[in-house]
Amino acid sequence: MKALFERFLLASRWLLIPFYVGLVLALVELLAKVVERVYQVATQFLDLTEEGVLLSALSVVDLTLSASLIVIVMLSGYANFVSRFDVMGHEEWPRWIADIDFSALKVKLMASIVAITAIKLLEAFMDAGHETDRDLGWQTGIHVVFVVSALLVAFADRIGDRHGNGEH
Image: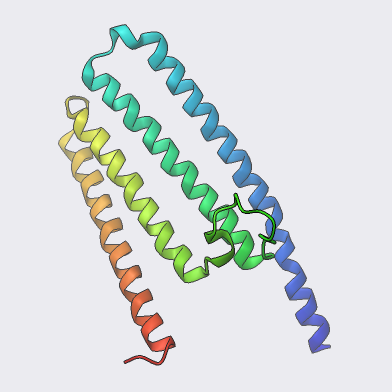
């Protein structure tokens, strides 16, 4: 009975597949937003100020970081929780696909989130004339919380690795 239940639990990991399909669709949606943003900049380029061009570029950077975050979650989540990738014969694939573990995934996710909030904060400060002091304060506070959280996750991960390897 125990072995049957364990096989059932292990097989249930395949229920994650629709989630990963959803992430692929989210990636396609982000691609559409990048195309839309680049089209807007291209058609309005002569009317944009230098600040407008910079804000547009930051918007594309933000979308790129968000898309990269989705790829990290999608590929490493699949590899960690569903099935390993067979990387043999696929030299063009990133090496981390086969090597990333859950601990490294947490650190990568937090670093990506910090980068995304930093870009959003920079965009807000670049467009400070259209932002309230309260909004800027909240965005700054949220970014600081993510930075501190990322540092704590990395620190806890480092301590866990040190104790897991027998070091003290």
